[in-house]
Length: 196
Image (cartoon, rainbow, N blue to C red; front, side, top):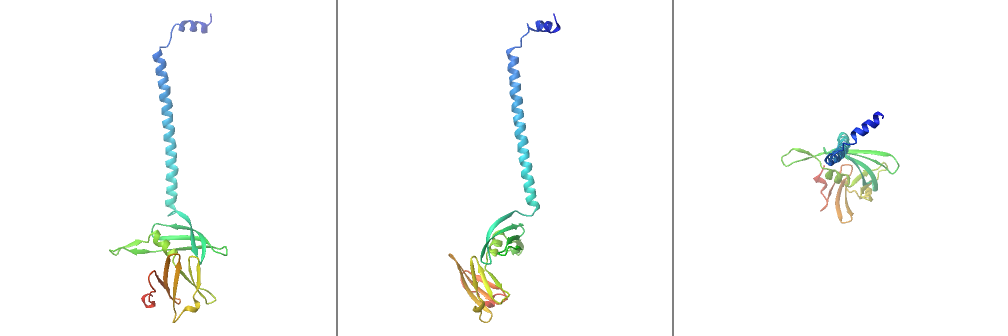
């Protein structure tokens, strides 16, 4: 008889109890459950790490860029704009000649107690959609507002021009001083002496 047969004969009389098999099955289930929990925790950590890195990247660039449709010189233009949260914006767009243009600006407002506060995104967007007066090289003067292009070259009287702008239900009354700015109001024309 070989050693293998001797071991087989010696241990053939010994049987594992049913209780022992049940414990082995419970340990296996616990181990599988533990592995599943560990895997879920690892995936959650990865998601948090990637999310945190994305937020850190956005914070590093100073703000989140977004693409908007904006009327520039009477043409609807796609622009990439970034607000820095400190009252400033930076914008890039391609003009009708295919040139990439950069524009930036911003400012502050004053709180009732006199402290300076950054201008909000809404105020900056309102400024970007305000009418624009352009003095061309050929001597002509144009007002641009949304899809409107209005030549006002011959409408000046004593270097002041009054223009009524209508876009849907919105009306603006515009007073333009030749090469000295303009003012608008939704109610009436502003006196030329009231500004500049």
